[in-house]
Length: 225
Image (cartoon, rainbow, N blue to C red):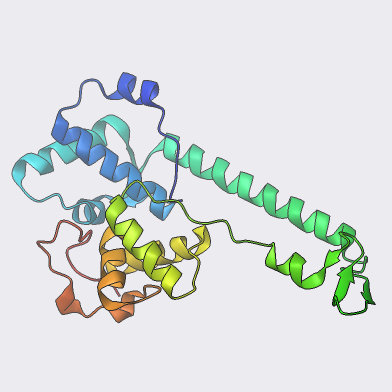
């Protein structure tokens, strides 16, 4: 999951006692939980959200005590698990609905083609030239994510447009997955694409020397295999 609803009222009610440091750690853990869609390893999670000094370690364990349960060595968040199951169920229902419609109509000819004088072939369902039908099918453009500055987003979209590669939500999700593999933020990945003229991003394209541990856009401190 790369999107989830943030219920401000529920959050403020449950976290009113947290310090600013604890708020930051809790939100980082929520994001990591939703991205991985599974319970977190307590030790690995500390490294992944960059908990380093003594104050951060103490705040980290206070947050775990308040909001997570430890089961078989993993930390579990009931609300996150509920939202993940609901998201997957909704996705599966949408997939089944599409398959049902497809199976219902698969025996029907997609187009009935008749030759005309000099106007090309015509789709009898829409009474439009077939090539016009295809041209009208546009890919829904991706929307700038909240964790990417608008200036970086505009530069990347402009670059993709110059390469005649419209940026869809599916393509953006692929870039984000590769960024997670590389241990960097989506912002870092898009900046790298702009500087190198890439239309996409692969974790293996980035040399280890390019990922600096002191860069705030580095999530894990080093690249993962």
